[in-house]
Image (cartoon, rainbow, N blue to C red; front, side, top):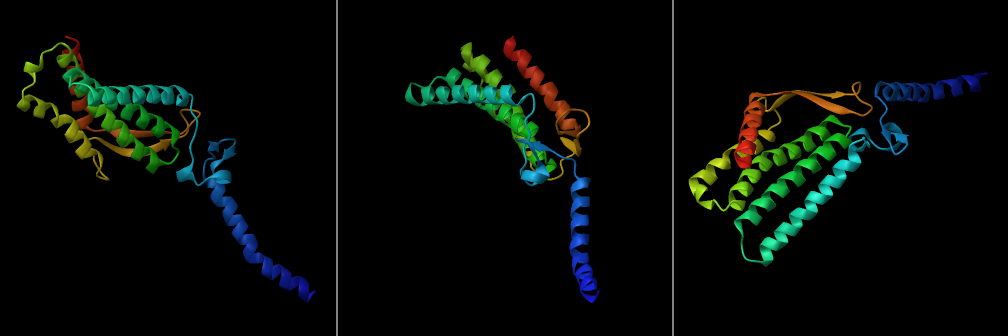
Length: 212
């Protein structure tokens, strides 16, 4: 009887530990990663999810990256052409944007999603300016782009990048939280700040001017 009492006393801490472990696992929503939940396979911050958009986004990223490399090689090996340089900048922005979008959707941890959202926004800041420069240089209107005007076109992308990297940047975004209810995969929600509204209007303006 004394031996049974010792065994029960010895097993009591282990029982409490297992119960606490089960409680911690139950509090975390299960994330599927290659047929296993994140708690069964990888730590949550290292886990990835496959979404319905993964394959098309990976394909788009690969195509735009290949075109960017081709344009850069053409620019480096042949005579400099302003339209090719602008096209290379535009494609680089598209590549960064689609890569950031892919990684943001694939991550399941809030910190990881915020990290890749920054990459997405860097690409989004480059694309409108790259598009306008390409449209102007393709039409052979380089005289419309004196250095002061080029410097002005760089202000919005530079301002966006500068605002992205502080830990708190309410001018762009705030109130980040994971959303596990709206879709079959984990997404991120956040409030948009006034710089986003300005950037949206600025981007549409450059797009329309480039088309004109």
